[in-house]
Image (cartoon, rainbow, N blue to C red; front, top):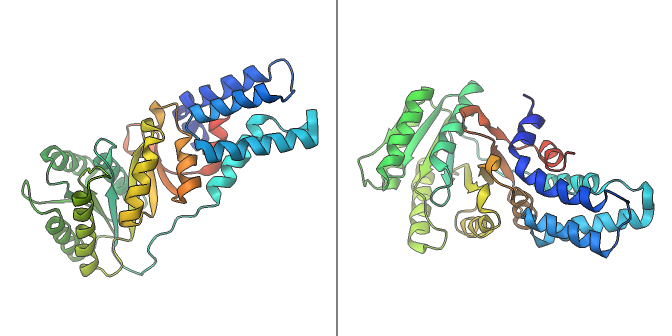
Length: 303
């Protein structure tokens, strides 16, 4: 199955919301009036495109129909172009300091799938010929350490873990030492889930990053926030608060295959300027894929 087909399958619920309403509006006539514009607006907001991105798409649709009339591109084609343009305006920004070991901190609230995401990210590097390692720094949830170890065994990727309740920063330190001694290329730090509104937990995350930076100047080289697509625009507040605390370099959006609110990807990147780096399209290790704006937009509005 090609990348577009995988996106199309995963985005089926969001696609259904959008295309059903758009087709209904224009089933009899291509005429664009206030009622049809309102219907399109509701469909976009229902898919969690957010006010700003929805307004941008509506403006483009109105401009196209006013200037070209019946010769205008379809609403889906116009929306698709605007989404691609918005997503491509933001490029990934990772720490550019040269290092033989690249360290990636994976953060987020509880329940977004951080531990599984860490394993899948490491698997992507492994399949590319690199030597990844996992660090179990979610020391407050024993199940998270066990889960990461199971993934490590399944994928043949080493896992560094501490005793239950150990200082997460100490585990991160030990993982960096181990990674350097073993010639590891990529180290993925699985951090504990934390509410973005809890200052003390966010400070703990900053401590982990300070400890890492003392061992490897400039690290972590990437800070990826894992978001659950099914939470829709609630993810916006998470992204904003984490970004203000630890300076995110990208987003990983999971559970796209189970939501009708995939427009949140566009809204967050458009309004906060944080690029989507990877998306989860299923449960298998290779179902975490690098984000492709064109395939995503085409799948969203595919007929």
